[in-house]
Length: 213
Image (cartoon, rainbow, N blue to C red; front, side, top):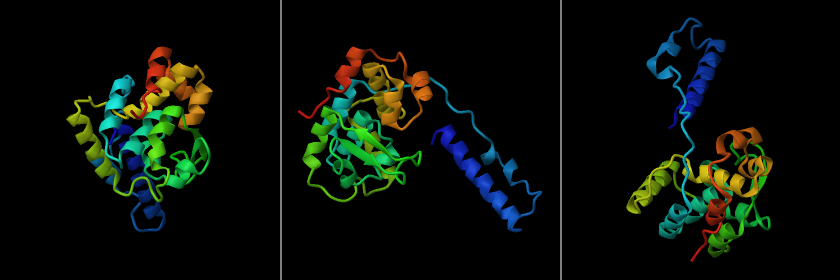
């Protein structure tokens, strides 16, 4: 996990320990928070890295039937991995032209409708008769399979590169941080600060032209 995620988990542990104190399960002068594992880590503030159009094409072409829609939803709709893995096919096809992400499946606990662009529609069409969950295995299983896929095709590692790519290219294509933020379930300020000026409109057009051959 990234430092930010680890710090969130540390905060959760701290909340639990405070609850234990209130219930008299733990003394108020405990020193558990002094443990090395509870020390906050500095979050990585390096440059945003993201996949390129040819890399997305390679990943989608080589992915198996189960992984392909998860990759497509991340790259062409900006849906977070954990959100995509919670979706059902009814969420994908239940609202024409959009993927419905309910509050219970959204990371931000806020419902949103995500537009399905033509390229994504083409990748999803073969699954129209599918039912149930898009992903039935663990997140660790997906990560391991994705790393194997990426390495087999000599695609470099890019942390959270599919979602970063979507935000980068969508903003470059439309020049509207509010529109990109609404699609990605993020704030306009984050879109403007993190993704502005990273790609050209021509590069963005290539990204959203990655279609099923």
